[in-house]
Image 1 (cartoon, rainbow, N blue to C red):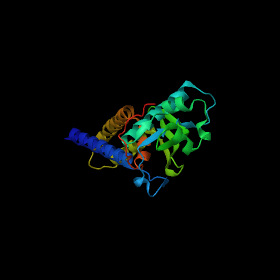
Image 2 (image 1 turned 60 degrees about the vertical axis):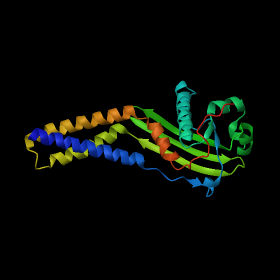
Image 3 (image 1 turned 90 degrees about the vertical axis):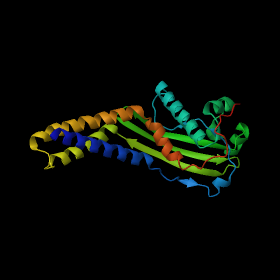
Image 4 (image 1 turned 180 degrees about the vertical axis):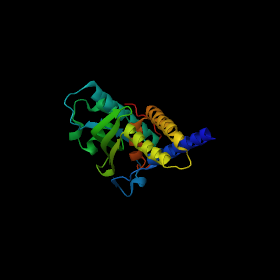
Length: 235
């Protein structure tokens, strides 16, 4: 009977934990700016400009390049999901060559790249350490061929999975400790079992999910769907 009660308590805790996580993932911030007639624009194709790295990085390391490539790949997938045809950052680099994209106007870039709009992304902070820290801070801007700003949104996401797990587990442990329905000699084993199960759930979830992709997805939910087919533009 006591064993069944402990098992039910752990199941209820894990279910609550899962529901809470899904609710947090489902929350999407509103865009900083969106042009009122965005939906009426016939925006079919977007060139994804190489991410502008504004982090205070002391060295131009391989890991730094991998971070940028990972983010650019995620951006390409998000643009496809929003039904825009896209020109990849790698294609953009090949076309503009040694030109500094930051110094080129949106009108010029749209004309040069033969697209309806461009996505400019700036990276200010990024950390993705398994089960320890996930943080990303970015700014996204989309301009059309006339140079008008269509959509602006900021991303500032920070999560420490281990501390989140400890905090949630501690709250549950306190609840068990004051529960008069559980006998005193069974409380400690119940708490230990619940804490162990919670830590395991967090480790598994953290390992299976792409935290960066989820963060970017929250921001791009506010971007209206495009008029394209979600295909890569070959130059």
